[in-house]
Image (tube, rainbow, N blue to C red; front, top):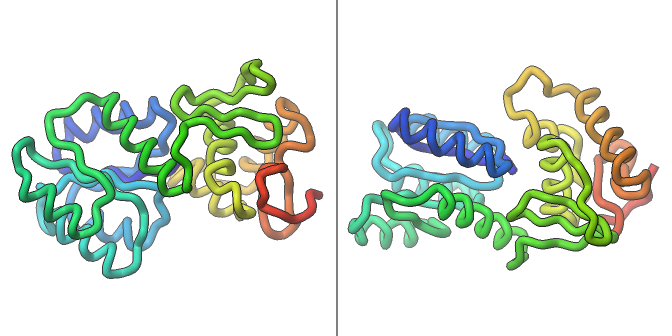
Length: 226
């Protein structure tokens, strides 16, 4: 999952990035409100973690601009402890959840996962698709109770397809969410990951609609595999 982290404190941002990356998120960071507003308005993220106390544009203004522009990504607002007025304003402006500082990293990760599940119309961290069971809390994939060994990149690809199980996902979108701005954002890199997954999971798990993209077989995305 591709996540936008908006936090101006460099130390806190580094700690949050490390914890979220360890939990399987692809993290991109913004250090001020102007950058946050631009990225959230022009890029596609699965979730934003937004601190309200930012230089330049404050977080509340950033959030209001996103919503006014029709950006519907889930937003978790970070607030100072006891600042209940900020929490009320954030929710009224369109925040999906809030977390007062200081907080434990485990709670932040759990809330992020819950928001993504809610956005996908699911309340549980476990999904069963075509005989496979994906556990987003433990970041594991299993078949008939037996774990399947996946690299972090392979897991993220399966998890993204599962999150968007009702549609065919274009290759460009998968590249964006798997690699972000890395140099490895090339079509052949994606094809290599898909090929490795098909060897591990079987040829009938990840389907292709030629010219459109990839989907998980049995997930209801439709289209014939090629």
